[in-house]
Length: 413
Length: 146
Image (cartoon, rainbow over all chains, first blue to last red; front, side):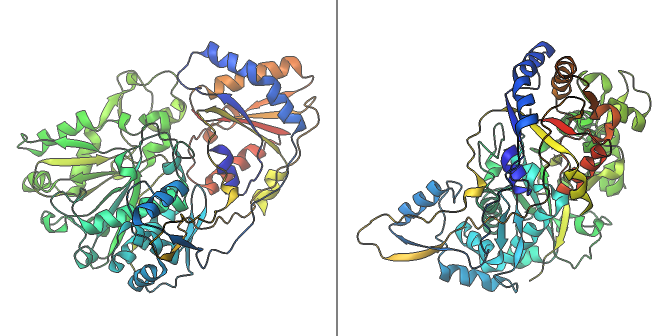
């Protein structure tokens, strides 16, 4: 993966010495032995390596290559899978006619390059995105949402490269706000992030197809995910349930600086969500205490072991009924976020001695004793909330992947 | 380009630690043309190759490495992953023992702000590299992976 990453970043022949896995979570004596075994090769590479400077040949991104095929739908799916052009699920053949029809859903020209998809740095034209939309079963009217999500993912703040190559179980979180939710039928209420919702399912499938096929993030490498997840097929994608916002609470995209009438897609790479199943609390204080036992700094890659994580934005998708509980008591969304931040803590004694950056943590939090309650982030402003889902007493905490921030993009037709 | 100039001044040696497998295909190979199965009774038709092309622009040029490490300044770069510092500390001990006049700089001691496992962007990685380049090492040995 490191070789491919260096290549895709424009360093074609970075010198490497490979040391057998694992490195982390083993005793120091074993590490020293590994260093001793690698030492001669390191010295050799340090003194004899010479750059070759070779890069792959550059081909034009447009028009997309056409391939002639003869056979059944089953054979086409089999061929695509063998070639690494599918996720293994059935897909609709991306014929030129179908792609042309899909392109009617956007005013962008087919040769427009949306960006280069990491880690492979495949050039993603609008035409190529449309081909994937066809493969995933999208309707043309979904194209603006798909392209907005892609633009957001390609923003460096989204850290798409890291999220698709990590050993962690990461997924893309896609939140849609504004009039486009109704216009194209994005599910935003009961079971919105689940199955049976055509727009959510097909747009999400297209996003992951593009990540896997154009971006090349395939297991076992460069996608190094230890376990992977079903969300590698269709990510978490839903509309905010703006109809169930308590009185006085603003939609998620408005809190992020957009107008209520704007249609906005927000993306962020996340770890598996943590569910708060609270059927019993009758006060906001009781309810927020539940979060204190569920959403701990350990959920976000070990919290202070990865100190940059504590300066990131963490999202809470509040179920409408939980939101109403706290709103009925006069709470605002900001109060909810602050109370969540106050509760979601663990004593410093939890972290192992190998945890780096303790000095930086001390600079931020002051002197640390084993009993010091370490917060989930450095500031309550890092907690952002939205209304997620329909009836029921369930809310969800979405911890971000490291160095990954939510990116919001206007949907443009 | 300042970053480029900065990086050209240093040789870079990266150590990849702990790879489970190196079965990844090279991204440099480009796409292949699909072979059509000889299925009778089906019409032929065109599909778009969904893989797209790879367009990589060179960003930095690495210097040739020195022919000897004697008398050289070597920067050890740790990204914060567990045990990477211990591995590099042992390499430092061996270098001092085996190589005459070698000088060792540990990044996590002189620039702790560069201990960042996942930078998230090439721009941020370049910022960190610039900080390390300011110490004017002849060579950088880095550790990464799990």
